[in-house]
Image (cartoon, rainbow, N blue to C red; front, side):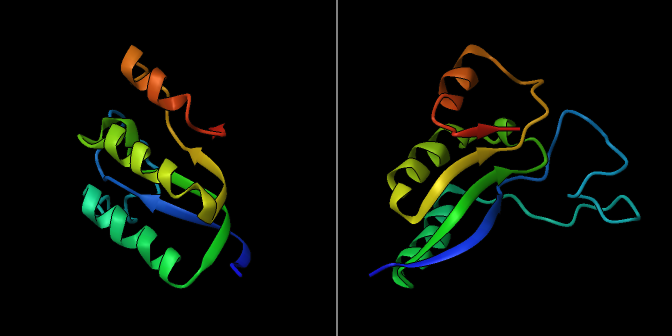
Length: 114
C-alpha cells in the first residue's frame, strides 16, 4: 500500500526567466542564482525515488525561474503525467508571459496553474 504524505513537492526545473523580479525565489539576497536547471533524466530520477519509496504526495508543482521556457518543458510534463498515481494534483507556477499555442496545449494537463 502506498504511504500518503499530505505535503506538496516542488520541482524547480530551471533557473532562467523572462523577468527580473527582486523577490524571486530562484535568487539569493545578492541576486545570484540558487538553483540549477534539471534535465528530463533528473526529473525521472526524482520521481522514481517517490515510486521506490512508495510515496504519494498531495500536490506536485513544476516551477522555476519560468518553467515554460525550459527546453524540455513538454517532455517533463508528459513524463510527470505518467506518474500521476504518486500525486493528487499537478500544479504549474508561471508568470504567464510565454503562453504560446504549444505551451497552452501542454498546460491543459495541469490541475492548477498559478
